[in-house]
Length: 359
Image (cartoon, rainbow, N blue to C red; front, side, top):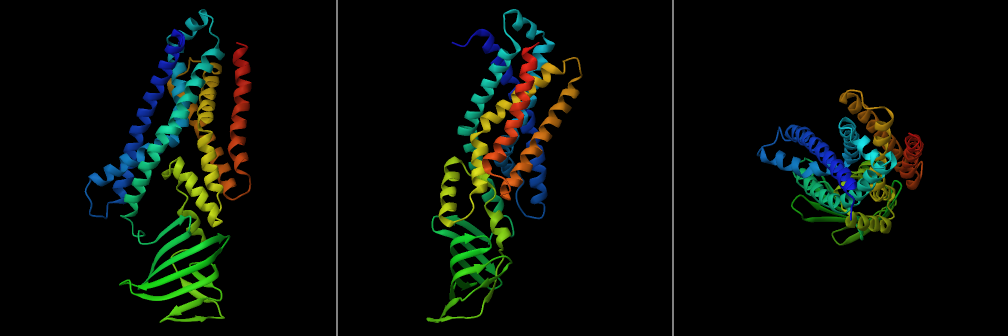
């Protein structure tokens, strides 16, 4: 059975997390709906569409800012118990600062696990619906690309032609074992192009030794064929970058498909590792908030603590962003990129907890 003091601490902590979450969620709704209205300003759609898209996307954005919600929520928790002198009461019953911190860190970790297993999977599916609807209202919806167990598939409109492209593998700037089925705008078959490799560095693909089948006659060209498309290696590499729209099951399936294609799984591995360590990340943010509040005192205005929370959040955000960029460029390993930042934060927490324990 949970002791009374633990119940009070957990309830007060959860209440603060809830209040801060509501504030951020409201802010996200306001900013997001303005963005959607700007996006649809030249399109003839009902006002309900931007509102609906805002609701679909808000939970995914909220998930991304939860670490900072936990940081600010934990700071507000300590402000309340310090203002009400509850910390002195807890200590009179033999509770140390470390004991109180351990309770809210344990709560944050448990919440993190639930957020990954439940909230993330729901928000990612809502994000998927959001992107699907949004893509249907963009000018680029006719240019599609997907990765399956059968390789890379591209549907591409160029002028009066529709191209269906299938590649078994992709390596650096080259597609391997490629078949291109070309149709006219009325979907009448025109020709089939196959090649062992195609250079896709630019949108004008260079096809080496293409085999072209047209009117049931197949010829092999000895000179490279320049094939005009709307895709290059950079565009293809960014088509699958929005991993937040995939739940854990879809992410692992996509990883398997990437591996079979020979496509880099660095981004997926990085995203999955960030998800798996998410509860630890939330716990660290709560620990940092506890250390800050118990070391800098509570006789300062609330705006001061808000500014401190925002500064810490910005520093942590850009540190994670920097290491994510480095891992995507394959300058450092995925494990190093995720754990190094958390290791530094844990080191800070360790030093801070020692100082708190001495008080």
